[in-house]
Length: 300
Image (cartoon, rainbow, N blue to C red; front, side, top):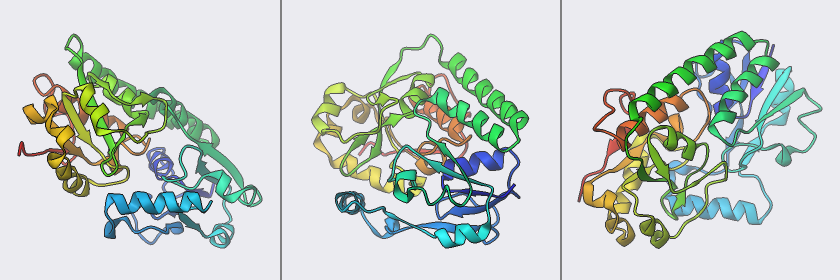
C-alpha cells in the first residue's frame, strides 16, 4: 500500500503500526525518521519560527477572513506518488489541511480517509480505524492495549488525590484555553481543566481564567516544541491576571512540548498524560514523564 498522510498525528500512528515503508507522502510538520525519503506534499504559508504568537494569530485570522487556506498543497506531486490511500483530518484548518480546502480533488486521486477525534476515547478508536483501512488491525489493537495500560497506570497513581484546578493554554497571545482531548488528558492525570472536553479550544479573557483560580497552569502553544513554549510562557509572568492565581503563588506554572505530546492525537499522547500527572501531582507521581517533555517556570 502507498499512503499519503496530510495529518502529522496520523503519520505518527501509521509509523506505530509498522507502516513506515508504505508512507510515501507527508506534510512539512510530520515526523520523518528518514528526511528526504518521503515526499513533502504540504507546506505552510506561515513561518512561525520568525513570528510572535500575536503575529501568527493575526496571519491565521487574515487567511480565514479572505477564505484562504494557510497551506500550499502540491496536488500534482500527490498524483505522481500514485497513492492507494490519502489521510486527511476534519478537525481544524489551522492545524492541518481539511477536506473542505480541496473539495473533491483528492477523491479523484485515491481513497480518502478522514480522521478527527474529539475526545480521548475517540483517539483510541482512530488507531483502530487506521489499522483497519491499512490492513494492520492486529497491530492497532496491540497499540491501543499498550496505551490503555499506561493510562490506567496513571489513573491508579492519582486515585484518591484531590483534583487540582488546571488551566492548559493552547496559545499565549492572545490566550486560548484547551479543547478536544486535552481536558480528558488532564482528567486522567488527576486535574480539572478550565477547557471544555470535546470542544475546540477557544479564546479566553485573563480575568475569567483568574476567577477559575488555577492551581496549575500548563502552557502548550499548538505545534510548538518545549524551547519555544518555555520562551513564550515567560510572557505570562508579567500578566496581572496570572500573578493573581494560586499557580503563580506556588510556582506551579509549566511549559510543555506541545507538538510532540498534546497538539496531536498520535500514540505519544500518553506521554503527555504522564507528564501532566507529574505536573499536577508531583507529590505522588515521579519519574514517569519522558525527559524534556516539560519545564517548570521560575517563580519570578
